Length: 280
Image (tube, rainbow, N blue to C red; front, side, top):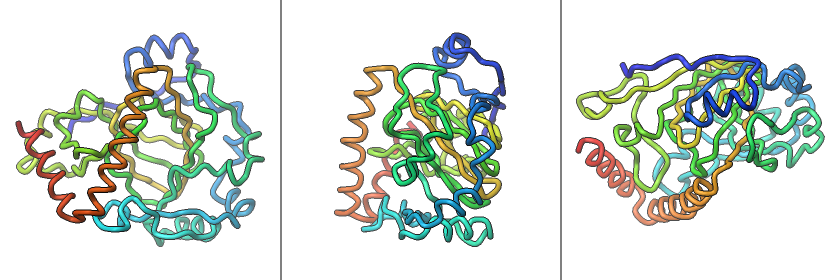
């Protein structure tokens, strides 16, 4: 197994203490009371969204979205939010809804939360929500724009596994992507020997918890229950903003374009390069 250290859980964290202990040191932390004053903490549940916003048509993704071909990085379909929530509550689907800014379709929800003030540089325009059923997995990746992520859980529980950017060279990072296909829970040390050098962090977040995922951290997430979360993103570094913009411009265009041209062969090429880099 890959050695994993428990992420600390704290409360009463001041902006100054957060900067000194976690932001400046680029260390993850779970803040248990960051959203205590939000109406959303008690109000937002799967049933609340199903009853009040179930009519919204939402794009849902399955594991097919990462497979080579014309559907690469594309949603499987659109469906009413109420039907999607009913499906994950029944445990009948692996479909996920992610990077969905529901506030664009339901602006009244803005009054239920606030933009965090625990650090500077938050983007007010991108409060993304993430929904999934029990057992759904978020494959290993880091966020392409290199922002710091504050992910708050509102319903259900999630197991979150993190690896620092320094571990990238051992994680079989697929070129021109922000992804890795390694199996965190069942690593194949014979096929991927560099994984023997990897160490990471893990925790379980539940209602009201906010996990701070520093810029560039790899994350692998499993939904332990049907549920959802919302993130807010912050970037107070001009250099990282530029690097993130370059990532978006090159990774997305090159990877998706090459996939359309070469299909499955492009996937094989990326895996071959990732293995060569890590093993050497």
